[in-house]
Amino acid sequence: MFYKILMITVGLFLGAITVPSWGGEKDNWVIIHAGTLLADARLETRSKQSIIVKNDSIFDIRAGYISATDLPGAGDVEIINLKDKFVMAGMIDSHTHVTGEIEPHEREKAVTTSDSEYALAGSVYARRVLNAGFTTVRNVGAPRESIFALRNSIRKGQILGPRILAAGWAISPLGGHGDENGFRPDVFGTPHSGICNGADDCRRAVRDQIKYGADVIKYVATGGVLSKIATGTGQQFTDAEQVAIVQSAHAMGRKVAAHAHGKGGIEAALRAGVDSIEHGSYLDKGTIKLFRKHGAYLVPTLLAGATVVDMAVNQPGFFTPEVAAKAILVGPVMAKALYFAYKNGVKIAFGTDSGVSAHGINGRELVLMVQAGMAERDVIISATVNAADLLGLPDRIGTLDAGKSADIIAASGDPLKDISTLLSPDFVMVRGVVAVDK
Ligand SMILES: [Zn+2]
Image 1 (cartoon, rainbow, N blue to C red):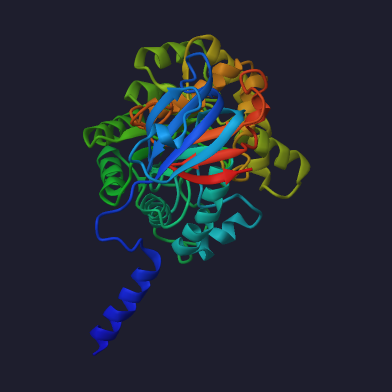
Image 2: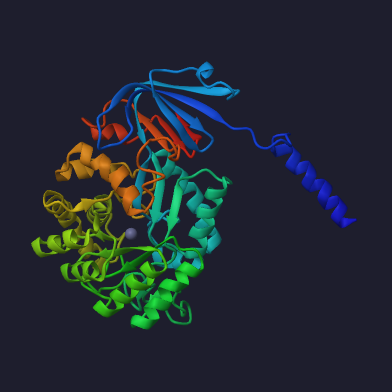
């Protein structure tokens, strides 16, 4: 009896939400009329183009404004008018923490917030990031149950958000930047599964993240600005530990991002073979050589630097004294490091560290990168083509082309001349679903 009622209930429920058709799902066709189209940030713009979207992907791009009659057999076709807009691929943020935002009482939060709360908060933050024009993010460190749940729900279409590549827990040495430090052991006694000591244990930590769903591995090569412990920003993992982390991740087909501020730590990570250096604050001439030799990306996260300096200066008491001191020291160095790396031919991939900054203002990083000395076009390349390459998804995202994901944004004005036009896109589509249409 119980099952009968259950089946009827399920039947009614499904009936209410699904298309009443037994002949398979109907295809969803959309034609976007793009006034100016930057299909690939490395190439020139084209005017008056039609992007044909079938379900979650781009079916074709044709010159001129075509109509529904040009798609025989498509049935109902929605036309979206972006004739007065600048249309381009959805942007990619290679460094986010979408399950949280820093706030006062951080320490208390660490012992009182459940993974479910982080996941639910993440669903709100992720939507803000999407609305800001970022259709893919690489989330490099979060309570892992929360971020995997969020990623999976978005992937299934249960909630609308950017595509997420998730690292799970950041791999960190005990007492290091990715650990929760200073609590009484009877309050916070068991380190999370990303904490490791010694090469063997670090292989275990990497494999543990992958076993439960990590798309990418993030580890902390050096100390960090916001770790609540006065351990500086120098190298923390040994060379041998870093080699073990990178090799075990690569052996299982996962790319590796290394958080690194100090020169020694950046260089150890590059020698170990990481795919990207996050922050890279104290890089120099020798570091640049290693970047180029290994082909690694720099993910500069200037917004994080600008945010923590602002908080340390303008909100006394927000950070502990040791964190405030580190913030004021490291923040301004990051923009100079980016310019030096850029001028010397290091590949740059866009990343904000949002979670340090508020989610949804990710576009401000674009402005900071231009202010640091990058050309607007190169900044857009970093947030599309380059980030797609770093994430290992160049066949799916980063440019607009037949067969690629329908991740499309539009702005008023020309971001190749004024990057701030991308701060608040007028139109955002992710995998064929419209998230913003102003
Ligand atoms: Zn980060």
